[in-house]
Image: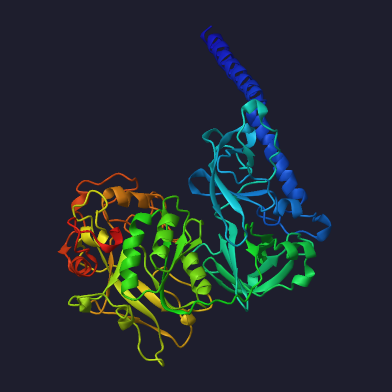
Length: 565
């Protein structure tokens, strides 16, 4: 009897399991009939499109025989191209012929698959290709779906009035993209993310080719001559092999082909043939270049100080600022300073930006100083000078025409918050006066003609051509005051994103002991206890005293400085 009871009990238990499995199966079918089923169909359709035709410069591509290659004009030069940036931000690049109103009051939105929308904010206009840009954010409710499709840019409208859009093109991924190009007299410099991912480990140029053109069947390919970091140099193409319309409209896409993987990197970069432009501006002996993001409040102090000690021209690589940068630049130029901005919205590309500047400024600058807007070059030998002199920085450079010195390396002193709780009213040189004892890293002043053709750099210095050497200054000759650890309200902005390609963002839980991290700082923008008094081992007021002597406005009771006018 007991045995029969156990058999019945087991049978009932098994029956319950079978019924439960059937219920779950029916539930999945019902659920899949909704949005998930639509998304899966879209995904299958996209994958079928990927198998049936290549998408040069639209997504990672398999190179197939020409009989399988259709015209790529629609896919490679659509009305808009969209790139997925970090933090779910989408950059939409509008073709010049795109029907986008320039009226300031016009509202636009990004329409994603599943009819999800988000506001589209006007961003910038690329200076060379005249392409307008917008930014929007992928809505949270569709972030779990794969793949991500390029959104449609439309005028804002109620849901019932929206057009029905077809989504078949995947978003460009920022981690694998050709994003910029620059032509010289002898070659083309192409900037590509995701090919050389490890610092110091680069693909051989023989494995790569530059690809010019909007149609895969007639694209022109040229040999790559150098491959380093995100910079690739290749020969100019023979434009006679391209359609006349592309040449006439200057709508020639350029990308990079990885031969051994049979794929072409997606691209938003365009090829511009080299032109000789006459300029009346004499070549500057000393320029300064940096990458800048929302640092307009620091700019006047940095420009006024360095111009008075010898910098003749400033070239700022704008990393997508949305503060008053352009207004401040215009004011500086009206006051007689020479300040130029270059739009460079690409995240984590400081090394590539510096490589670009070494080519871009070569014909107009002899020496280039690479320091950030929170870094000020100073020599203890200037302590007794009553006024600044434009010859001061030149005293740190080689004075013999036959010198083989191609780069000056200047060590950095890192200053702490110095008990400041907000941005110092009279500037960083006046407010931050306490620093760490040991110097950290260095910055450089580079002879541009001495830069190696690979353009390789480590932010702090460049690789040099054979025959040139670098010279490191002693601390008594020159030093960079780096106002790195500022008042917390300013410093926490650095958590947005580090600009170097090979430095881990502070929000990433990696390399906790790296020198690129602030000692004792966690992975979240939360103010550490006692922040205002951290990094204070040496009281150093040398530059504060010198700048007060040089730049204080004597008739003001508030002790205003020249950059506060």
